[in-house]
Image (tube, rainbow, N blue to C red):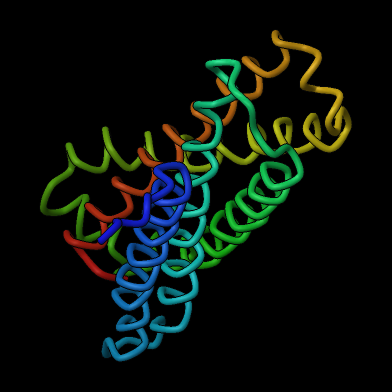
Length: 192
C-alpha cells in the first residue's frame, strides 16, 4: 500500500486560506451581532465592525504574502496586487464607517462623555492615539497598491522596491492592528 505524497506547498496555501476564512467568518459574526444590540446606532456599529474586521483579515493575508517580498522569494504579483487592492478598499471602508460612527462617539451623552467621566486617562492616552493611528494605514496601502500596479511584474527586477513594498505592507498592517485593538477596547468599555 502506498501513501500518496502530500504537496507541502499546496497544504500550506490551503491552511493559510482556511485560517483566514475561519477568522473572517467568526469575526464577522461578532460584528453582525451588533445589529441586535439595543441602540439606534446598531447598523453603523455593524457596518464599521464588519468593514474593520474584513480589512484586518485581508491585510493580514496580504502581509503574509509580503514576507516573500522581503526575503526576495518568488511570488505571484497579480495575486498580490489584487490582495493589496482589496486591503486598501476595505481599509478605506473601515475609515469611512469609523468616521460615520465617530459622530455618535463624540455626541452628547456618547461613549466619549462616559469615558471622560469614568476613566479620563484612558481617553487622553488611548483614544487620542487611536483617532490618528487608525487613519495611517490607508495612505501606506495606497502607496503599496499604486506601486504594485505601476510596476506590474517588472517589480521583480527591483529588489529594493520589493523590500520597500514589503515594509510598507507590514507597517500598514501594524498600524491597522493597533487601531483595531484600541477600537475593541473602546467597544468593550462602552458600546456606542
